[in-house]
Amino acid sequence: MRVSIIHPRELGASDIDRWRDLQTASPAFDSPFLSPEFTITVGSLRDHVRVAVMHDGPDVVGFFPFERHPLGIGKPVAAGLTDAQGMVHAKDVEFDPARLIKSCGLAVFEFDHLVAGQPLLPLRHSRHPSPVIDMRAGYDSYIETIKATSGKTYRTTAYKSRKLQRDVGPLRYDHATTDTAALRTLLGWKTDQYRRTGRTDRFARPWIVELVERLHATDSEHFAGAMDMLYVDGLPVAGHFGLRTATTLAGWFPAYDPAYAKYSPGLIQHLSMAEKAAERGIQIIDMGRGEKEYKEKLKNGEYHVAEGRIARPSAGAGVHWMLRVPVRKARGTVLANPALRNTADRALKTFGRIRASVQS
Image (cartoon, rainbow, N blue to C red; front, top):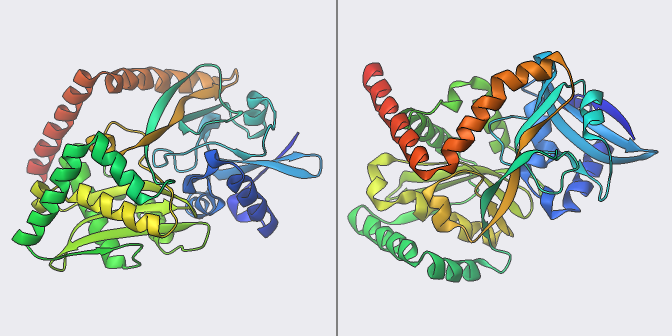
């Protein structure tokens, strides 16, 4: 096995075609976050993005996109933003993970959404569910399943949709819109949500805003940004920006206008999005790892992703362990316990309200 390290901009047309062939050969890799276009776009904004190209003799057998940070700390591309991570590789490829990260110039590689079937997977790791909307049997079949498993939610959402139209006006749904104004509205809602709930505002970082804008402008058969917006009486009330391959839509940034919260516009929007996406050939909507009530109500299946790290003896790996591992374990303990998770969530929302009042 020979490994060459390049910047994403150095990928040639043949490399991209081979990457895409490997990606489409396995359902486990059918995520836009594992598409070459995503790594190339992030690499155009983040100079520390690299791709390890793996060769077995004359054949390219895998691509491993990663970020290389000081002290040899390795992370997935756009770490903290992505719901699918890892390498895209040929079936049954074998290699030593420690040797790979050494070839990448890394002391450690940490991950929290490593997809299934990865030769990278270390012995010690944790597995977490990633809920999905599975429409491989069709949208109508999905709806019948939801009526059986979340009947109350479905009926209530349908009722609120009718009430919203009675109270305000007719609904309109724009699927895969290229309207940049709609995108700006959505990002504004998302920023307000982050601040209101005490979370860090991702869009305070200009490179993330630029990334979303560039991805929104990308549209091809294999990869595209997907912007949806729900309107009532001509006014935007809920939307979502995600990424898609030909058959999978990755949930990314959903948000709504809190002035319409009593109508559950997010649920109305997600069901409309699923219907329109199915019409365009989308079979899976991956809502991503995370304990969110709407995901539990809408899911009819789940994948699993792994969290952990690969390390080799080095000072950088030692520093990383001290700074990251105890924090990650504590976070995992909180998220695994509903009582602790709810307490932490209330504390963050309280912090958000205090921060908003101070800033106003």
